[in-house]
Length: 399
Image (cartoon, rainbow, N blue to C red):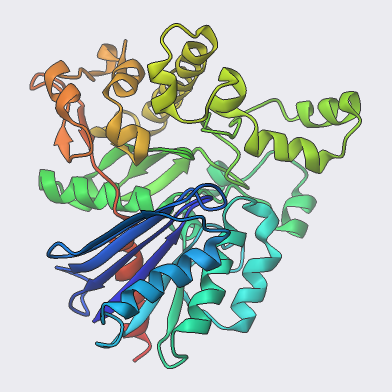
């Protein structure tokens, strides 16, 4: 089956055109690409397996335009004319409505739109791409929504429930939904494959560290806790998101600054995190270059400290772990950040090999020492594989 996987971030659109069997295994990547900095200066990087590439600057106004740009390119090089069995879209938040992949129709689009406030930076952009794809691709080609939140639907109630009045929880379907589910699932499955560890024997802490950041405690291949909650704002410090704060700060700032709660929520989503602390950038790469800037160094220290706190708490939740996995743009490409996070963790058997860690930039590699009782790996995340596999599984089950 040939499947197009579309993955929208807050300011990016990635796609992969994959072909493989109905069992979801042994996919061949026919083409892939990314549109970066959507809404800003913009950059396009598309490539075909075998070498043909397109790289150029392009001002792209929104994710719908980015999707049309990608689909137009695929059509121009005849990859779409050769038949397409399905399209899979990553949707960040499925709310209480979706815990499995679903065929996209007008009703599904309407529901995803109605819960867009729960994922302010993601559901809207993803829907722009969905609408564009539905306009360009023939209706005879099924399009499937694959939800980040679905992976965490089985987290125990004592970990997913907030300690607020029961009636409000039930009335408004409030729970800790969790996010980055496709990324965490990929890390778990790859660890199981490369270490020959049966899925039901895995005890892992997976960390997706990028513009958005989350950590997940995994037992038997399934998540038992995760750092993001009702929205993607909870948990770790991120590029522009605050992560965990005292909830009373929202009301306090709204009253003192004379603004609506919604504006404070926007500050916490778009003006906080690495950007808010450093006053310089939400990009860890830029902060690492600014060694003389005290606020930049403080932002990095806070980031690593908070990840280490979650690491320690999840070791307690799991009663120890086989390993810790780093994924995401920061996790895959920043040896300095990984070293800082793992500093002082020798007590639990986690010791990095300095040379391995330094060499592991954007590649799959073990970075723990041979003597370490707990392994550490870098596993570059490929959400497109999971999107394609889930799309094929859904379509196969319906035929």
